Image (tube, rainbow, N blue to C red):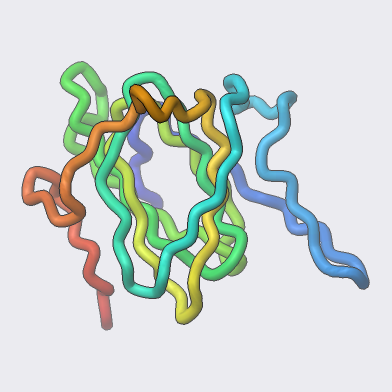
Length: 155
């Protein structure tokens, strides 16, 4: 059953273009419907089973894609005036499910390594990181105020 997307969250399926040399996928283009503006591109890695969470931005949109391994991405909307206040989203991103997820400002997000190898995540953000005054607000990965369980669901 498809999940109800948090207001402002958008998903873009990524098209893998293979040839005899490997594959190519365009993550985000200036002419994409969900493109807003360019701030910076960075990559981060996460080890298997490690959680990097929770944070949000007041101004910045994030655009996450996992280009090696797999991650479980969790989102939580606690914006007071949002039509999706209280909604949680969960996405699996990686080479086995190549998608780009756009995360709007004020939506809590984090991810967990969900593969047997280190995962590599690319973020195309709308704002450059300002070291002296970062647009980043944090909570602990296991904050009980966010109704999300990072544990693997066996069954």
